[in-house]
Amino acid sequence: MYSHIRIRFLAPKTPYLRDSVLQTMKLTIPELSLVVLIGPSGCGKSTFAAKYFRATEVISSDHCRALVADDENDMGATPAAFRILHSIARERLRSGRIAVVDATSAQPESRKPLVALAAKQDCLPVAIVFDLPEELCVARNRGRANRNLPAGVIRRQRDQMKRSMNGLQGEGFRFVYVLDSVEAVDSAVIERQPLSLNRDLGVLGLESEPVEPAP
Ligand SMILES: Nc1ncnc2c1ncn2[C@@H]1O[C@H](COP(=O)(O)OP(=O)(O)OP(=O)(O)O)[C@@H](O)[C@H]1O
Ligand SMILES: [Mg+2]
Image (cartoon, rainbow, N blue to C red):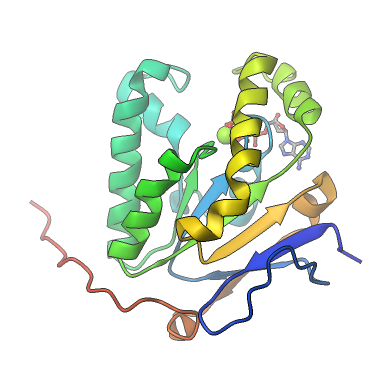
């Protein structure tokens, strides 16, 4: 049962479990972590985030685009939106709160600043990969009122994700969960690991930046 959930877990002093299939549907996440949802448009990142995390825990690139340009689909606002997204993530981690990044994050370059940000704040980066069929993502996009990306864009995002997903641990993600079917996504359960266990899970012990007082 639940063998459709491929869970890859890496922690110091833990045997390297690449591609291991664990008989569980539990996704363990340190209470203080930077969770990065990875997958092409339509794979269900925002739906998943809304199901498992509080609205204030989720930082969405769409929302950040809307904040700066009044339009979540205004791609011209993307650089500014990500500056805001990174800034909110940094502030949340700095104040000891989990941050969930809801953006495509299909390319290594988009994930690199997130991993760096987590390390700087002494937090573990966690990747949740939505490895779902391209046709499903395209079909779901067709059914959306506010967004209908061309199939080619979705294919490119998915190809970028597929090409790089085996290297997520090498990029610095300490937990990598791959959900590779609709059933896996729908049956996943998030278990938050208490802060007291973070050290056992391999927090690096880096110094956090001092918290600056609000102006
Ligand atoms: N597990 C699911 N089962 C059925 N439908 C789903 C599921 N997850 C998402 N959907 C539907 O698919 C569509 C896209 O989902 P969602 O907005 O969560 O995708 P997304 O990955 O956040 O896309 P984007 O990157 O464009 O923001 C929505 O209409 C949503 O209702
Ligand atoms: Mg979304």
